[in-house]
View 1 (cartoon, rainbow, N blue to C red):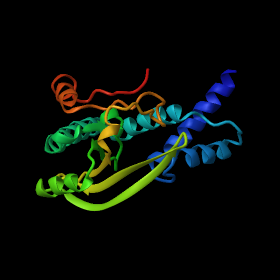
View 2: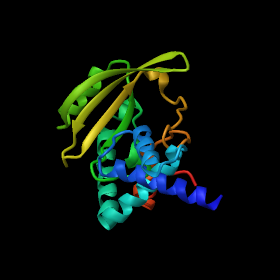
View 3: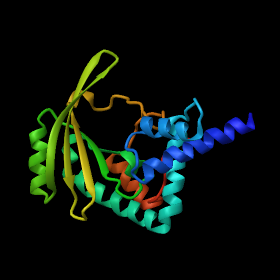
View 4: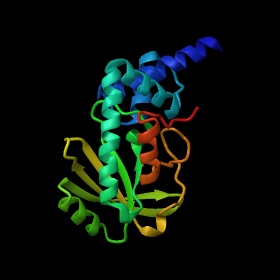
Length: 204
């Protein structure tokens, strides 16, 4: 039993290493390649890989990682204030506190006309690089979202996902950590920055 546990942990660590150093982009492929390396047929969960990935990032980046996280959270807050009329929520690794080199700032907004978001970003000095509509099928429903890829003033990557206003407040599951994708509102992010700016939001 212990051997199986240790082996699973090693597979998770290998998958996380592949993701951290960019050899793989997706969890599924990273886990499959890691399992192949160790000659096993079981795969760790996304959560197990994500926790190892967080450890690897901490080992490799140390204090600079925390400093960068706080800077990215402050910059996210500025952008969220800019988009305050669209219920902005900070999500992704900057919300979680699990950033690594190359992580971007992910913000969800809710607007029936995404062009409004684009105009505000451009007027706020944000360098918009590309936009794309993405459709996904969830439990038989087709959900559509507008993705804006940009760069912040400090040269951090920025992805803003615009969904229809009727989707605001709806619960979503995180495919990586398995918990509710809560994120942080403007007020919640301000409180985090005041009290514990590098706090992590990951399942126990």
